[in-house]
Image (tube, helix red, strand yellow):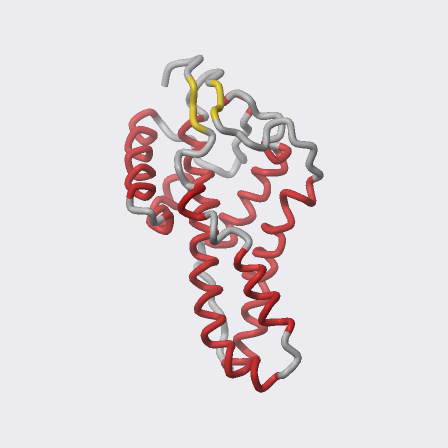
Length: 196
């Protein structure tokens, strides 16, 4: 890409995922708030399906953000358009708390609950934790994007593979396809492109 061009901070994910972000925690909290174990056992299978679906959307969104960042990292000093976080005064806990919750849920919470309520072991998608942990690191090293006005201010996590120009162009097409399809979960197929 050329330098000094304007680059979208969000290529179009927000309208697709806006209802899903934070919904995993809310759904889990509402389920956990019930004190009646019998009702919880009855409700858990449907709650678990809902959480699994929301979790997949959330993780796909975070992967999509990493993929997009890998694309725009090639723009030298491109001006970021639409970064609503720019200039915000946010503490690290404010922008990592949702990721911390999801990581804990995938690592322990869902397995504990599926063992208790379904007598099954929960096996998360093997891509989920690397995506969640890497995205958390991405947020921290970029301080929640509160001071990212240009592409050269975005720092990619070291564990992500660097993409060449041909890979970037092909990836942009796949991102556009997922956005046009209104299905960010399609981006899970691109996991291997940036994760080793």
